[in-house]
View 1 (spheres, rainbow, N blue to C red):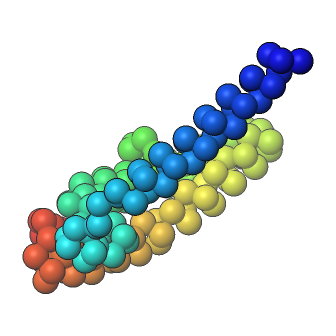
View 2 (view 1 turned 180 degrees about the vertical axis):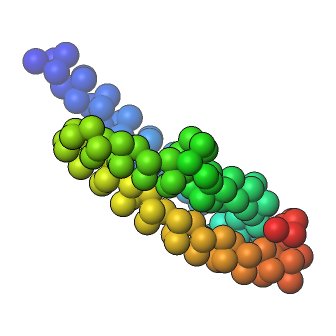
Length: 135
């Protein structure tokens, strides 16, 4: 019984000490700097810095998708595969590849729109004097 009382009182003292210490730590937190106050938190600087690499990646993906039938990953190559599967009578394969083709075709306008949006972002970055190279 006595050891239980000692344990309970030790826990109470520890809680009281930690409560006071926690308040003291919270009061000593430094105020945010002036540069932190001006940040918007939208990641503009980081996006401006990455814009050239993003543009290269978009250009490469569009070139691949819009490539000829000999280019791996192109819409034309997948169309040819669908035709061959249909000609061979492999309807399940043709259906699978056709769904894949539909998705791949939908990527082209999406990536083109992203390229246009990124060009606007790069222009904005240049006017704001961020580190965006011309895209």
